[in-house]
Structures are given as structure tokens and as C-alpha cells.
Length: 193
Ligand code: SF4
Image (cartoon, rainbow, N blue to C red):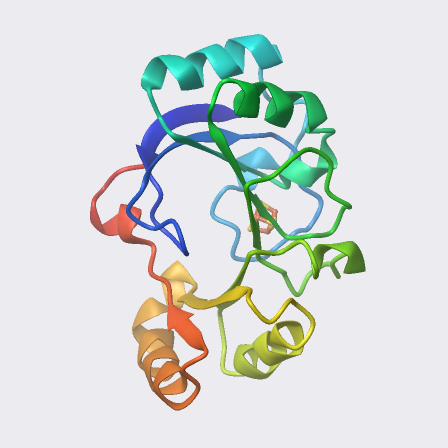
């Protein structure tokens, strides 16, 4: 759908320079999705893996973040293999609804209430990022925290349109349950993509 060099705004790699590759296609259907234009897999130009890898290497980015849409809809073996061979770290942001393909240096698992994840993601996740849209999401977050590995990084992030309402609750929750950390979409404060 699009690719650009920017700063990772969320989660464990927040603040790191990273090249984003946003792949078209998603069938998860989050009501608050801020990239609904990504959903139609056929609405975006096709690029070769070589072209994409060339763009990343030219940018000098140390990390490529493969996102979407739901990037795990695609077979990512060739893309991740070529990126790693070029010395670029491969990070994915996925809702976990499809089994992962490819080789990953970092897996950010962000489950969504609108479609259940495939259980294979639990042991692969390096990071669990829960988007908090309403109060009941804390209990829902704990369900997943109990399923991922004990060294998985745990983040609670307010949904952008609910930030004013949810951030104070997240702050209190993290203070009481310090295994969690707060994640904010700092790219939106910086006005960068
Ligand atoms: S999984 Fe991501 S891209 Fe898909 S609908 Fe949800 S927020 Fe949007």
C-alpha cells in the first residue's frame, strides 16, 4: 500500500528509525481502524521484493517494519530473507490471525477483538501490544498476557480517538500492574507518518 522511512512511534521500538512497508489486505475489520484504505488487497500497486529491499537499503534504515493491513495474509518468506541478507532487521506488526511466514527479528502481536488470533502466535510474540478502546480491554489484555512467553514485553496503548479518556486509566493500571508499560503513538505528536 505504501512504504516510507520514518520513526517507529509505538511499542518496544518507539523512537527508532525504521522503514515501514505497509502491505495491502486486511479482513480483521476493527471499527476504529485508522487505515481502512488498506483493507482491499487489490487496491494497491504491486512491487517486487527486490524493489522494496532496494528502497530500504537506499534509505539506510536499520530496521524494516512490515505492517498493514494484516501483513501475515501474505507469504513473507522471500521478503524477510532478502531483508536479513541485506543486514536489515525484520519486525512485524500483526493481529496474529494468520500463522506467520518468514524470518523475524521482532514480532509485535497486537490482537483485535474483531477476529481471534491463531494460537501459533503466542510463543512467537516478542511484544504484546493491546489497544485500549474501553475499560473492559484491561481484562481482555490479561487473557493474552497469560498466553505469551514470560519474557514477552507488554504494552497498553490508548486508541487514538479515546486517548483523553483511556490514558489516565492506563497510567493507573500500569502503576498497579507494573509488568505492563504505556505505549503512545508518538509519531502522531511529531506529525510524521
Ligand atoms: S487489524 Fe489493523 S489494519 Fe486490520 S482492521 Fe484492525 S487496525 Fe485496521
